[in-house]
Amino acid sequence: MAPLVAANLFFAVAFAASSINSTNIYYASARVESCSGCRLSRLPDVKQFIFEDLPNYNNVEFKHIPGAVPELLLFNDNEEEIERLPLSSLTREECNNLLISKGFTKKASKDEI
Image (tube, rainbow, N blue to C red):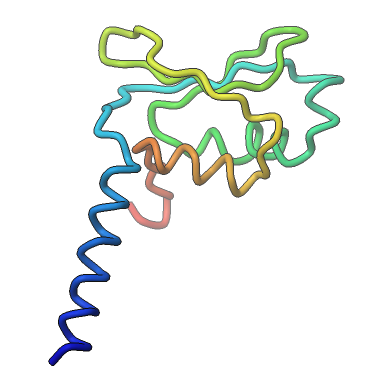
């Protein structure tokens, strides 16, 4: 009986910890701002994320700003900026996971419709 109680306690604590780490902030939309040239070319993962993955997300757009470092901007329903996160040090997978962790979903593919 004790191992079962310990296992249940472990999962309860793990679930509570994950709930604490994830904020309950709702983001209505997001925008990635970045240059599209020299600076971004030195970040191949981020560049692939922006041009190949980003268009597949709902309520997320790309804005070209010459000379800008890649950043993810998160907005509320009133289009007020809530959070700004740098992307330069992230991998392509981490960029995708970041968007998903902030509540953004991928668009339905043509095959799913």
